[in-house]
Length: 132
Image (tube, rainbow, N blue to C red; front, side):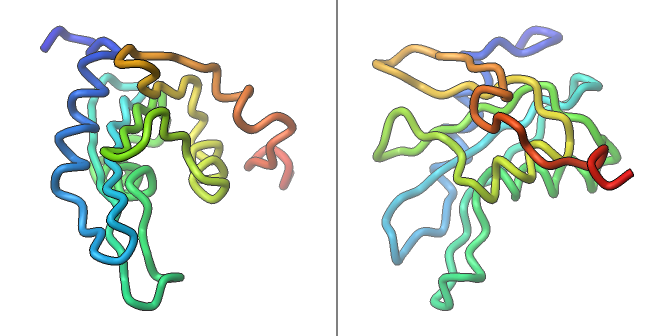
């Protein structure tokens, strides 16, 4: 991989992460790759639970890995659903991505990377600055 991964490389990492998902109930495996503002990449997959409310989305799993590694800002997130394209983040994940300043969301459309400015996915979002 190059020093800063391309959108296609991030999608490939997200696809690989989706392959490790634990999704026995929905059979909807999802993977995410988060590119931190410091250039590090962290991946996550969805982990379901019989008590559905305890399910963790791929994006939030990747964010947890990023935070654990010491990074606090997201540049880009790439998301792949193995059975759906495009696969956009749910509302809870959009809010979590906003918390860490995500700038770009990349999904797969017709086999190609499609990038969106994050603000298009969560206009007028509520964030840390709103608490001051």
